[in-house]
Length: 471
Ligand code: AMP
Image (cartoon, rainbow, N blue to C red):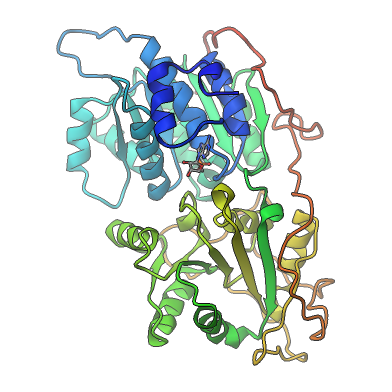
């Protein structure tokens, strides 16, 4: 199956080929025809599956084959597609994809998000863009200031909708929906299907085609995963030890809190390890700089919180370290999916202390396998150590660090764990994963029914009028 067989025109296929992509990924095979048909779409897909091209390519196709009628001769290009994303990084990345894939079309794009000056964005909007990628808060700022006109939006994409809800954007999303024209095509992408997402999908989508795909590198299959049991206060020396002894030169490290990220950067710096942090309290320029240096290989360690790391796409990232286990098991799958991409082999190691045994058990339950454990010489954990409550937040504003429910996250108590380190004698070197990928289940409308993989959209016609009462 080729991209042109999916109904994309030559000028779009050409741009895709230039990126070296010849075969559509599973989500692209299903989403592209579904979106070209004009219907709504509910897609269960994470970063790493090729989802961005899955919606970008058919949108370019639709917009380039249907003309707009300017209201008068002076009219600038109207915004015909609005893509909402939870984070600035993801917004920038999605817009870059639109630009790359759309380079041989006559469509243009722009991106707006908070944390940077508004004036260049006002200018951009004045000049007119066909496809706008935005984070919800800044989009509403523009609306309030009267610097944006969304009356001609034909297609709305909510990308990583679950994250947007986790980050408390539901009210912003509702406000945006109320501004948009009622007749439009809606595409909702989400990695998970909490009750909140189901409610949103019910409100937003009209008889959607439904697609769910596993990760392209389905978590547990190609990524070597390992747990290193360690005492709480030995995590930092252990990380420095691992980086130095294995000469790791590009490591993405996840911490639970912003404070934890800052502290670790400082500690690694004292060890002579070049590290920077990326999280919601950092300025946009600091975040962009850290990411750019990490991508080009000049920064050894990027320390990130889950939300800030969302959407970071780095080809062939060799090492991911869970310095702290995530509070929500699904985040483990997102985190380790950063490595082993595009066929590269990757390694994901988790430094787990006594406080985190329950979190580890939850993760192992989700991914349906036990992770191999390896005790490192010189870091044998104290068998008598007592669990302490986990600090879930750094406090302060910015982007939240823990998810507010929906998936069983939040302030969970630790309990004696079936998954406590399986004795210090259980030294294992079986780093490679064998288990089956975790299955997500649940039809967004009918939780008891599995989501069906559809290669053809459910509806062949346009979406008609009305938007399922989303306004
Ligand atoms: P995404 O899931 O959209 O974040 O994409 C993950 C990565 O897959 C990005 O680096 C894309 O450039 C890449 N990608 C997208 N489509 C394809 C494809 N058909 N073949 C190979 N790689 C792809």
